[in-house]
Length: 349
Image (cartoon, rainbow, N blue to C red; front, side, top):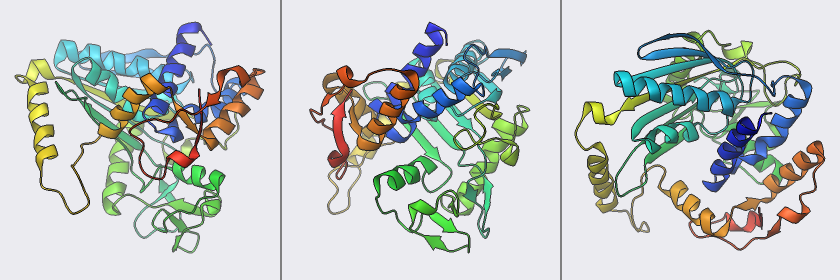
């Protein structure tokens, strides 16, 4: 890949690891490398605008690395919003793009509200189904604040993202029975059954299913991208073939629409922090607060890596013919990590 494109991919993955969202960070690198080697991802692919108006555009990703296309698309949406107040950019011919929250945060960093979403090959049941009907389509938003970090939510429309099930499977950890539905249509707590013999459950049943179809409409139907079973799996599919993923990015220029949005968002966050709490809860937190705390700690202590991420990076290094030995050191620990996480953090990189 070109230097700037490689930097973009590295920035997205390392930022995601810095947030502590290890399922969507550098752990995915080995999958991208395999596709780059086989040709399903085009190392020199160039995303380009193929249709546009004052407040919208459609981008063809040219099967470039999903991060490259997505940063290009969100940057375009921000530019449209600066001119028209709002900007929508739809993407076709893309691939897995990592953490949707990264692209939403790009808008918030520039003082705009950002939304990012993408479709995927079906892996999530619909209420009442025994098989996958929709993808675990991600949806993220970021809202700029003033004294506080941006509000930021990055969610799958499934009860959990498939990456969390894969992580539990690799680590040999149990999962709640609410995450998966087996081939008999009944809940299962066996992570080893996924994805061959089970599918993800939709978040809040019909609510997650409904959001999945909205995302499919905005990221797939509207953009001309592949939809549902037309999409190829970026992990299990033929790495020599493009996956055809779609995505959608929206930006809203806060300054053009209202006075002092950051200050009003600060007030909102303060109200949440001051709300009465249940026994055992010290203070309520807002979406993104833990991730920004982890990111700030990572600037000081580097990024502690779970064992499965470390194993994936070593495999990536083998694919690329690199020696990671000089880049790894025993973990120094980090503030802001939730209970039960620290036992998996063996190394910093």
